[in-house]
Image (cartoon, rainbow, N blue to C red):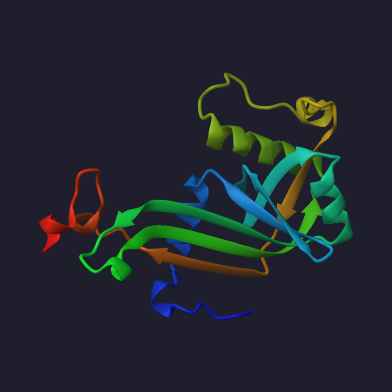
Length: 181
């Protein structure tokens, strides 16, 4: 695996990375379609040192996973633009995490139900009065009628980069370079 080029931006704080992944809302799953990359956004949850997502049991994504389960999931959040009187030094505050490994379908109904409940807890906390039942997960169909599958990625490699926001440099509408000289 290649090293992070800008080592000063590398984040190695496991707690910070785990907190970031627990709060970030969208991940981008990168797969290979022959020689062509295929990247799809998805909702996800981190549990037990694995990233989980769900989706229809049919379609291009599933075909590609079956052909080659190796993947990369990238999660990134933009925290704003930071200005500088020198145009080339204008920068973006962000955090990003890349997870590499092989995807596996979750076949255990207890695990799949726990994952789906964790996703509800993350994306619509407190909305439902009752916990998700195994029978619901077992019977669930997508809006197009396909059965839903849960996938697990236990990362073999994880990298993270962070460029922390410097509030005094934050760009806001109306801020002009004359104010910073």
